[in-house]
Length: 241
Image (cartoon, rainbow, N blue to C red; front, side):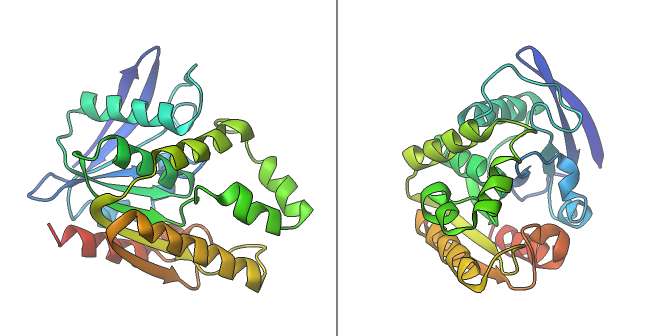
């Protein structure tokens, strides 16, 4: 089953799609990376939706969704996702899957609504200490191109505010967590790559039940470079319910 809807949230509409059917498993909710529409999941959505019901959506101002006048920070986006889930009438619990910046939103959602989230899968997710621990180790050119990318949703300051919000909301979660780390990042030296993988491993500490997968041959977009590794991680988690 596939169903597309436009959901009114305040003074704008968000585009969402439901795939698959609710069986006896939790619903999967997917959060894309910065500036990415829900089309980013095209590589895995058909396989994942065979497992259970799956919700994908475009955040405000992306894809087919209208722009929001609210700040483009994670806390606001989490509020909007909560409203969307309520309106689409999806019942908890959910497994949240977040790629890159979407992992920041997924983590904040899981700490704000712990009774609704039963699992977390983070795909090369942005760590809360990215600005102070990782960025300064990279070349000026890398830092400049990184800063200049913030034109699609939220500016650089709003993105960094989201990382601050992630730090402030950080707590131990009582849910299974899988962290997938890209092992072949573009423009990373061996040292940078090792630092990145180490920071991904640090995210494991937010749960007492966590698993680490190093996608050695994948760039940042693991779900596109190696869909099987992501699909298998999702299957493994969903089979525990």
